[in-house]
Image 1 (cartoon, protein in one colour):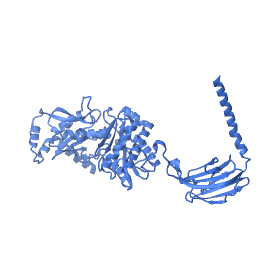
Image 2: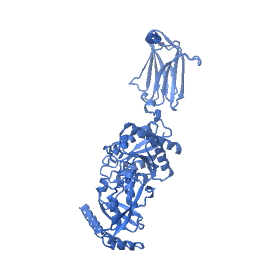
Image 3: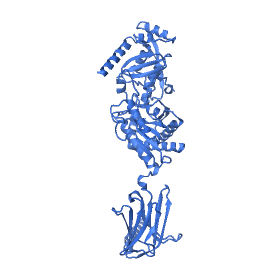
Image 4: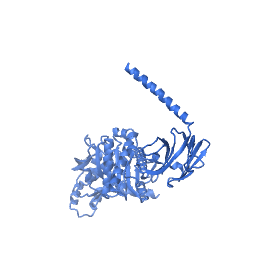
Length: 184
Length: 359
Ligand SMILES: [Zn+2]
């Protein structure tokens, strides 16, 4: 029963975030001057387009490569739009798609300088692992989000919960700062 | 024509030789040997092992003898010298007392029985019995030589390229990546990371133990270290705790197979957290040997925020042997020869590490 209640609460929270993601973020008290820019962006109609910098590993997984992508905001935040673009993957044969196609993004919320990126269990289940696989999956998300100057740290969660690792290597229990070591 | 002569000559030699071999001992059986010399000493061999050497000299060569052990008297080595008389040599002779205590010589009809009392079970000693020809330079007659080592020796001793310096007396924690309900990464031909890491780890443990190291394995079978259905934290912390339970543990070595979404990713790499310079030193020394042994692409060493490395209290490293997601390297990883080459390379890296940091 307890678990059901917790799940219900989490579900409601997730839904609340999903429905009113941008409102939530704008309500955060902050003295960051750039916040106003965000507000302006998110209040614009759905046809608003922005260019985001997203990161894919090269095909030999020796470094992350930045790719500019123009995305529609379509009622969502630029943060979620950037992660959505990342999850769409790349057709460039010199680059690799690392987030499993079966994974679902449940939401991106920003609190202060930290973004929480929540996935369903498909991310873990359909990810093959490996130290390099983990480093570049996590690195592509962290570096894509920290590309926004107001985001300094990223916490990856699974169905609302903090996890220690995705597949037994990298410790992701705490928010991670920009991963410069995979940028070279 | 010349060739034919050669062949004939060789054949004749062989026949004569064979006749000689079978003929001489037959005659020796009727020769009566009398002891006229006794000497014993202790020495260290090339591996630093202690031996006691007992030499019984006699008037004639071609001695026949039998070596036996009495199962009811496990502390005794018995050698019967056929057609031999004790002569002037004493009945009871005290020995070094560390390996062998004493020897008694008893005439038994036409033969003589030498019984050597060793300090503990003969099973725990390596020994050899052989005859030695007359040594004019050292004024030694024809002898029967009995040598007994302080330990069992070669059975549990590294030989050839498995002999490594510096690891003796050190305690190494070996962590075979994944296991049990966690398969780790799976290759395109369905090779599972957890099985490869266990095989390489077991070989690493064997080689280190042969060289006198103490090895602690976080797992030695296909199991979850914490238990099935544990959280990832419980599972990884359980591996870290194995090292923490052994206060004398010197290093922690986690062994994995790498994976990436694209099969093109390849090569070998080693990870460390970097609590101290020893983490990167250990990683680099293992990486060097891995690249030299496998010829795989050198991806270098990397500092990374890996759970088992960050939470280790002792110098720790995580070896990503090769990419199981790359068909060529998956094939390599599945080969017993490559597994052994990788295990030996990891051990050489460990040996180089201990030689550098010392005690
Ligand atoms: Zn692994």
